[in-house]
Length: 215
Image (cartoon, rainbow, N blue to C red; front, top):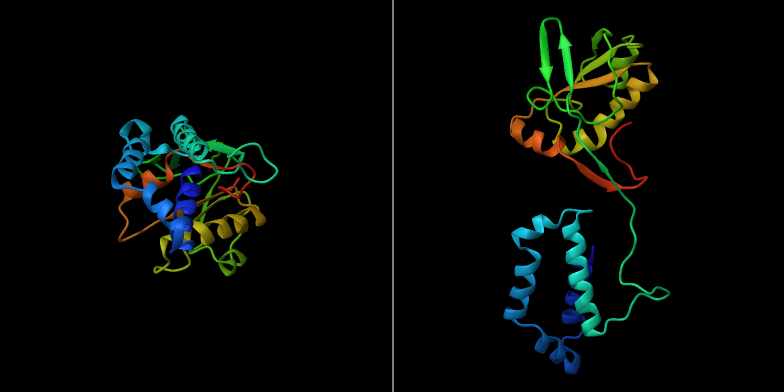
């Protein structure tokens, strides 16, 4: 957040005062050597990408704060700090997720991924309801069963809509109709399975109390 704030202030200073003494002062204070020095530090391998909530992002924030003080930037009105406190929570991936269907056992990361939910073990029946639209649920009794659907609303559903809109809507239908869990069959032609594993099977940081994975 502090890095973004620094960039916004810098851009505002160079665009809002195109002429006069202020522009000349800003111009004199910016050079290739100084810019490369900041970037070399902030983008160093030792900073490990400055992941949200990590010690490295705190180091980057303190580094930028030091230059705020050096340049004499005023602190936000009514505060005594350049920082704004934001509550974060980290969600860790499960150690194992197994789904058994007859003699077949599907393994976490190799065959399946977990979007969210509480830990549970069940020997309930599976029921398939197509794409899992509201009309599909009206025709099938899913109470006490594990619901299986195709991902999206049709074969052309983009991945961004699938995860952001369609999956949460289906999960709600499962809960509203008494189902135990939702399993979606994903078939992306242009997204490798390995990419989905990297996207969905790692730890995640989100705002405390914000919208996250289904619970």
